Image 1 (tube, rainbow over the protein chains, first blue to last red):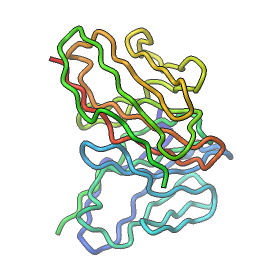
Image 2 (cartoon, chains in turn cyan, blue):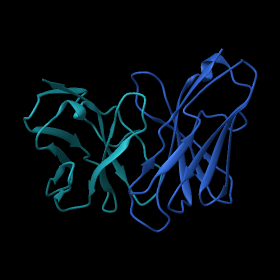
Image 3 (cartoon, rainbow over the protein chains, first blue to last red):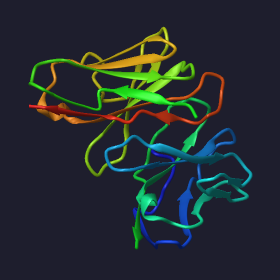
Image 4 (tube, each protein chain N blue to C red):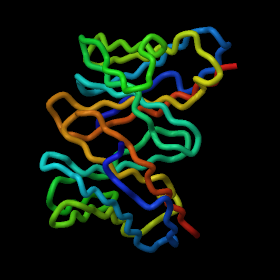
Length: 109
Length: 116
């Protein structure tokens, strides 16, 4: 079973920030928090990952709760190209990764 | 960044034939690769974990004799769907992570299999 829970869908306006939440209350100390996104008919694409500290890269930011039981992916300015299914998963160094249902993000022009 | 190449992108075959899908890590070595299948509007379902030089580990409910996995080198894993039937029609995706490297997973672009 997936070890993360996410809202089924979210909607955002173009050029506005988007906060995508993820709950992972059973996370272990060695689990990294990963985010991937998938466009239609494509394989998932890596977005960001972290362990304990907040992370920033050119695509997004990852805010991790102090107890690590939840995290939030932040897209600072949503564009139409960001419309995708976003998956939050836990990964421990190459061990099998189970995907949950993910959040389908709709971006309105 | 690391790239995983998956081929073919789509394939149509007749019922009863076998289809092979290749997954290659182009610029890194991958001890472990993963195979997923995905039905429309659904999430990825892990089928098996492919380990270089050893037998694959299949998830519960996945028939190992139907979905043959070979991982003969650190850059290539193949999935063969044997005696394909229409219910095997699906989107198949592979992924890999660098050996001893980061925990990031790199995904292939997927293979859409349609069995007539």
